[in-house]
Length: 373
Ligand code: MG
Ligand code: ZN
Image (cartoon, protein in one colour):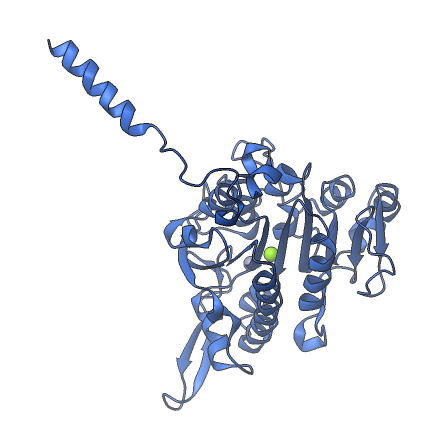
């Protein structure tokens, strides 16, 4: 009798676990809620105060304010309460927590597929950073190494990666190497048109070819050292290129140096880098509004500097102050726009960024095209 009761109770539980019939049929294209494209923007070291700075400095309304859905992420790594950029980006790129320094490898150092690799058979992918392109954040989307300092190995892995478009610094890691190899040649041999002189749109911007812009020996210049509109312009260019792919695309854009301003305890450095990042948000949101099929997600790996805008002479006098030269474990804001954006509200782990991107698109099904319909 008891056994029968348990058996029927189990059946009841099972029945409750059955997925509901989808209310929108596959043929009803108008009611689709799945994005075709994702743009993930990472402000390295960008906590709430860094975002706040844009509300007190710079011209016009901050683009941060255009996002309808806001969340918070918990950023600890698999081993440390305070994450670094490698573990942080690995969480976004793979959905796995790993240790500080890990580049798209799990805590046991086994390689794990990145979102860019997951979609590369069907979609086009792009990466943009104001650091070198082999720095921890962009590297975690295409390379697999146990330590972030393995820049030359990371550069080698970029040449044969699934990335279709990239822009940033880092020429030295391709040509000025311990092994004397020339990995700019390897990029060309693997189908890249490489420009090391300027961010200029090629005459024929064909999907038949891949494009790489390496515009500094290591990191790009600071905004305060006349970097100009590299980040918004490279983003605009990537969107022009990637949106030619009718199946969709994944683009990661990093404002790398917000973090470096935090490490330097330099408020002006942070403020100028955040203004540049916000301008880039404007480019992506303008694209997403026109396109209607693009999910835009903005977040950060961690906060840097324990940055505060404190009162100076009076409550009308803001002074940037810091509590550390390193990172902090602050909860980090997430901003989302477009189809699937509502799932980014709430408080969750940084790996939830990956989970929500993949769930919104159904990319893990291996059929991104069908899921977009
Ligand atoms: Mg970074
Ligand atoms: Zn840092």
